[in-house]
Length: 364
Image (tube, rainbow, N blue to C red):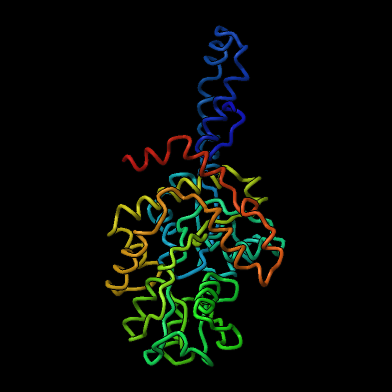
């Protein structure tokens, strides 16, 4: 594949345009070119100044809106890409908005946002329902989270007849709770009522107020639950399950029509991950801003947790998607027949890796 055929990033687009212009005009003689240049030099310079300023504003300030699905440190990669200046570096003017749980996927389908940082669970549910989406990058490829309960609940079996809180049906916590209940022989809807509460902070608040007796939590909400005296009934991380957790999703249409923008975003996302994993102090400041949490111990715990689990190279996981689809199979029979490859587009990360980008990034 030559220079003129291969997919471009926004930065490469500028180089491509200039190179193509020279290529197409190579038949002009040097003497003719010099005479034309001398005659038009001054007005041409003025015109080019105006054109390039306009070009720069258009190409190097591509506006996008990204919805992130949870007030959890698992979402930090996109925040780091924004606050570290990497999105601006690659020509993207990004607005990041908190769009809880599966509503981020719905906003993406509706065209209200251009990218979403969600989970493979909500993405798979939307694709199975007919949405034309693709996962293009990932920061977290493990099932993480815990089930916390009121202090008097000492064993999972004591949850019979009780209520367990999740953010929303179809979200990661929903699947996490289902895995937990099945592991301990508890029947969802019969032994235990599963209640959606809107977001992760709201689950811990509901626990504190006694509105539910247990709930799904991830850092920093796990630290908050401990501080309130809640009991950790089960740590899902101990299962060692490879699962597509935090990932970047786009519509196939947007990926097809604005591939350079998405590729540039993935590069910035990779740099955001690198910054998170190598700059603890800055990462904590960024989490403090987006999580709206001031307690140092909660932020320290969240960083310690995710710095051991984030991806160095943001590849989505096909194995992790298969796990999700298998889990959905009982309630959605079409999930059993679905190929994980139809949910994921690995080509952007592959192109970036083949260019030596990640190798150089981590070398530095």
